[in-house]
Image (cartoon, rainbow, N blue to C red; front, side, top):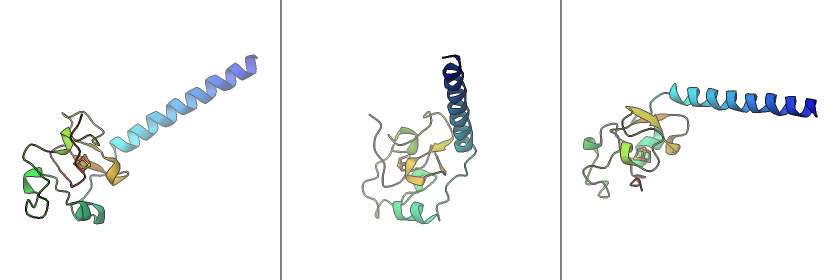
Length: 103
Ligand code: SF4
């Protein structure tokens, strides 16, 4: 019993450490570049005001990563992870064609 409790504690600590590490890894992840193939395919711009409105008519003023459902940080953060770009981060002021208004 003692042993399984110890195992549980060790496993829990390991999972918590792994989570903390992966959060840290994401926080340190590089920003996605506009020339990244995925970024180019999605029309990502680090500054939403630079979006090609003729090519991406879906874009509307006021839309930006910081108020997108997929943005993984608080709206007030400068940048955060976005699942569209795997391990790379996007600017809160950015935008891409996968924009989904935060509910
Ligand atoms: Fe920004 Fe949303 Fe596009 Fe991700 S999916 S880059 S958070 S607009």
